[in-house]
Image 1 (cartoon, rainbow, N blue to C red):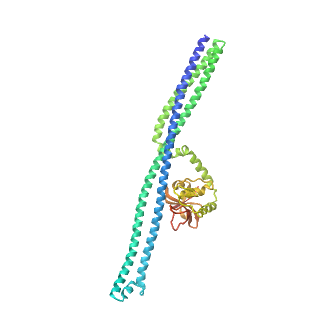
Image 2: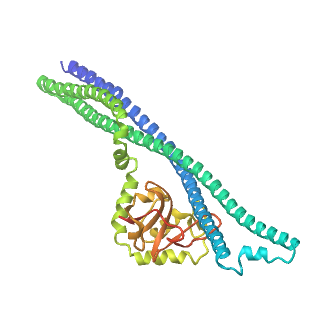
Image 3: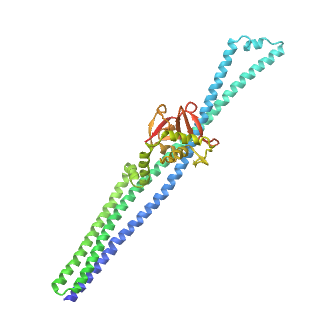
Length: 399
């Protein structure tokens, strides 16, 4: 009798081992593989996001350069127009110096011809200079239009990549939840296996049939428990797959929140820390730090953020990093760290932006009195600029 009970117990333990190995281990292994695959996709997509951001930053630098050149040409054209108008008024009001006096005061016919030629040449030169400036302005404006279109297209690419990252973040969460359930099921199965093994030992040590039957019942119950667990786990897996399919259709709606909570958890933490620390930054120290850079002959270097070279957003990130505030190296991304305000409301230490909100292409640090410190463009060094010379579009105060 006891021998039969031992045999039954061995069968129970064997079936339990089979359930554990074929059920939980395989599922957990498959899910872990899927998580690794999603992690690889996230890594690959992040590289594409970084490349897209670099292209966007370069295009935004070109936007700024074109805008500066257009502003300079407009200023020169207006000055030329003003000069021509002044000449016309002088010709009408000053009898001794008027063009008519100049022409009629000739000594001979050939002298009159020479004087007419001189006046014609002067007028032609002025008009030609004005026309050349207008042509240059139109050429730069056309170039800026192409750059603007490229920026818009690159933003769409970046947006798609961000959405892809959000979808991958959703998949990763679902797989982690699935694996957590599988791990829990595995732990329960292993506990049941230990109980069955203990029951087998109890059967062998039993001194009576009653004790042996009781031990066998314990082992059988352990098998039933883990079998039920794996059955439910299969149902859960099926439901998870269904939910994954449904959630993928709605991923674009919840993508931002998902990315903030999962894939970009590190960024979110940094942002929170930045928000809490930036409010206590001494703005006078920020201004002093920014001004000190203008004395170091630091060249503009696209993508740079060190004393050997920096671009506009690299400068603002460099200065604020000295005070424990971590800003991303991109003008649009830096907008997310500020509260928008008008340029007239800007205070020393605030950031100034050029371009439209959400699509800025240049940034500087306001130092007061209508001035700012910025890294202008290739060929120039970090210097002080004037709001009246080249006006920013809007300002932002760090949250």
